[in-house]
Length: 271
Length: 229
Image 1 (tube, helix red, strand yellow):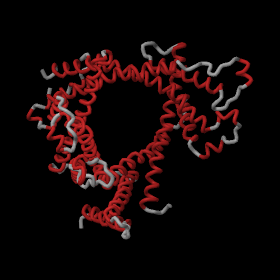
Image 2 (cartoon, each protein chain N blue to C red; image 1 turned 90 degrees about the horizontal axis):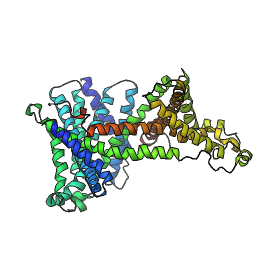
Image 3 (cartoon, one colour; image 1 turned 45 degrees about the horizontal axis):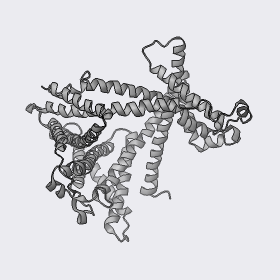
Image 4 (cartoon, helix red, strand yellow; image 1 turned 90 degrees about the vertical axis):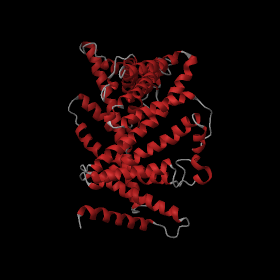
């Protein structure tokens, strides 16, 4: 028999075997038990299929990858349809349709046809190119880009520009300051201590300014400006190092989660 | 007409949203635009799904390389779509009809999500742990002062999360607890990292604001180019 046929058939047989092994035959709710067995077995198989990429690109990985794409696309379509279209648009557009979808009619708002029309216009991109109507979808694209731009201007101005500068500049340079004598007599390097607080605030203020200096390209980075810019690079390097370390931690904890699932829930070799 | 109308739409929509921030009676317009946005996003999802369908169907019909896997995509897509759009196998359908919760416990949609999508997502991302290890090997070389700073900060943060790191500096007295690895790691994340993050955020904000203004004023038109103009 052809290898391309044999491998999928063998995989299906092994999969069914694992499902049967996982089934709790004494369980009261047979349907629930079957779903649980299927869930754990499918989870284990798919995890191994993805990990098989570590050896090399292969048919099992491609299967899992393609399945992921198909399932994800449909998942987001369904979530979008039920949570946005069915709950936000249709209850304001059609009483009969909203009742058919099990949603209460919330009163007619005529201008909700605008996004629906723009949405339908967007779908013209799917029509064959020979119809030469796809260009109309740029109207929707223009609306999306413009509304994003409009919202971003004010949101970024407030949250990422003014608020960040205000938070930086409102940091006290001498926190909890009661005098030089007190400072020296209570001096320590504990994490919650006054010196560390003061040092942290200085690091943040100088770090933000030097980081911004590095991003200022209208002046040549030489002399004192260059030295501040150099400090800015170091601050950014610390940030990138922190981001890298944090990402590594996140990925490793995900890996640990998958391995725990494989060895505990699926294979049952650890308690 | 093909260029003018989109530019006009961009200018009017963007202008209204920005002005609405400063004219209180217009604030409702912003709320409506946000809802419009969410509704259009659903059609964008449909566009994505339709495009996926089109490409994979073409792949199967023309028997291009790996066309068999396109069938897997299509089967997964249609099964999930049927389960989600028609709420098939949803236990709440009996009492509530289509008002049933899409992710109701025991629904087939949720079961397929838990059995297929959730493990695939987690495995895909956890796979990156291996590639990040090889990236670390390349990045963690103290070739110059910049690379050394990056190396040291990442190393301290990673060390601070491990048992060895905590034990190695556990002997330090409280008055110098700042130098305990777990505290240094925390400090790097919460303070030193914050400085760089803020500088980047302020830079990004300025970039986004200027770019958004260019788009609204019609100076930047790249999003309207391409396709059958």
